[in-house]
Length: 367
Image (cartoon, rainbow, N blue to C red):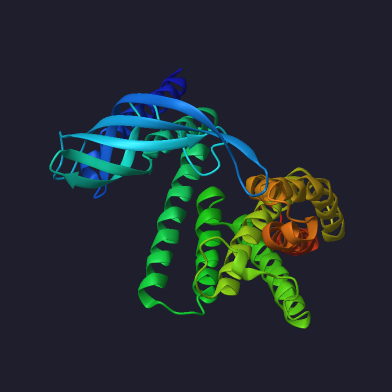
């Protein structure tokens, strides 16, 4: 009864603190240097039909928007914001009353006008974080709290690494993120599994599988002279796009391999605890069977994530009469290669994790 009370108390505190966090984010306009406006009135004008050079038909509607500046030197003043949106919403947005938006202000003698730069979306992000953390703590208790802590620490380390790379401003920044990947692996496994032999085996399998997959991919890319690889197609990549591609591939492969290695090693440790006399050969065979059963779904998850990421851009390319080959080269090729590299890591991790576990597990380790 006492234990149940403590569990419910932790969940209630998480929900309350999360609610206060969301409330604070809703009224955090003073923390922004960019001007934020709360929309108080929206008037739509007549809708017009439009057709572009590719015979794509759409409709456009002009909006006259009034609002109140929420921060900065114009705080409290009224502002008028023109806006035009299309029914497709391809490159624009429809705004409504009570929306909060970022604005570039243009002061005039007759009053303030401006241009809307986009939504203030931090409240939505805060709510999603609140719900995710509450569910983790509610369903997984201490394990969920540890998972949240590991994610938070990894995010801090990641942003510090990005700031460091920007400050140093070097072209060959792949090794910075390779080091960060090592820190991610050690920190995550230490928090989730603990500092024990199981964590060590999982870490060895993860690093080995990830390293081999990236090494193989680099060798193949060099042998093929990067043919068909349009690194410049990476969004917002202004310098060293290949380095950026390899760094992103490394981190993506690390996550997939760590997931699989954790499942295999945890299963083999549990098997060793239940059958202390099982031989290393039998453990290795069991590890391969576990890996083969989760390999397919894991690779498909990665592929579906990739499809979801490029789907809007691919549709846009097809809608503007581009061929399948051209669309694939500029929107899908890099993602497919990243998925294949992660798939290589997943396949390699099966024998690697099974081998390390079968050789390093000893009686009583699982406890």
